[in-house]
Length: 302
View 1 (spheres, rainbow, N blue to C red):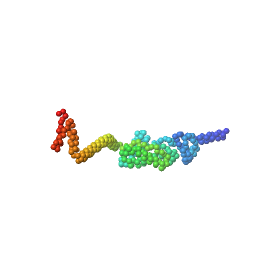
View 2: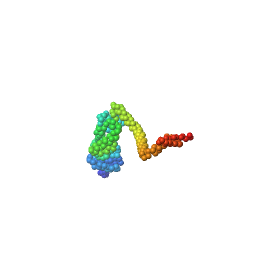
View 3: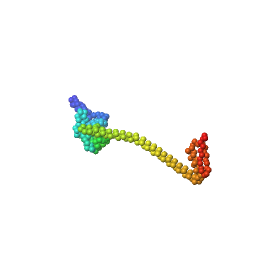
View 4: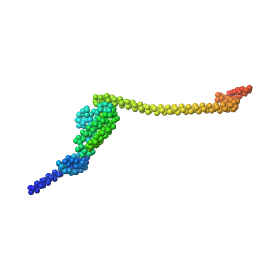
């Protein structure tokens, strides 16, 4: 009975030993299996899996759907504890040779578990250094005013592209999801002067906008009035020209008729003139004795 008991015990021990190779991979994880340090299974899917027991094979699990963070210019743990970062850690030189303090957070996911585990010993440290290098390159050609105001989104995109290109060149299996420029501010020693400059620029923009609004309101009205005056002057000019041409034509016609019959034309003009200047008179007598042409007037009622 003793040998059988020993065999049974050995069998149970072996069974338990090989059972240690059973492992579970969660839905948000990816597992990597190595055999004597060499990768034999690079992407083990979620579920119940099996590998050879230690020391033959070993399992590494990584959460590949989790978004991780890496701080640049400060340390997240220090910030939680209220510890200020070292001055040199968060300061960069801008394109116009001004010192500015930046705090950047890089968000990333694991795109290749095996590469993330074995290509470099400190992939997060690599992200930090690549982000610092990219910030130095981008901020170093950007004026400080733009860094503080309009160029923030552009800086984030360019730094993201630079960090991702560096990670891809090293092949560390990391995908940068976003670069967040949390703060961009001048050093405390000159922050008041910078604020005065920002306020002055804001006032300048406000005055320019007010002036533009006033111009947009006044100019169309002035143009309308000018156009109206121009049209009125043109109409008056055309009217006067037409009247002058009519008078000239009338004079020419009268002259033509006068040349044909001077005496008759003279009498007709005389009568027309009398009708204009004596509208209240109703009776007219003409005496042409002795070669003269005299007008005798009898007013109405006499």
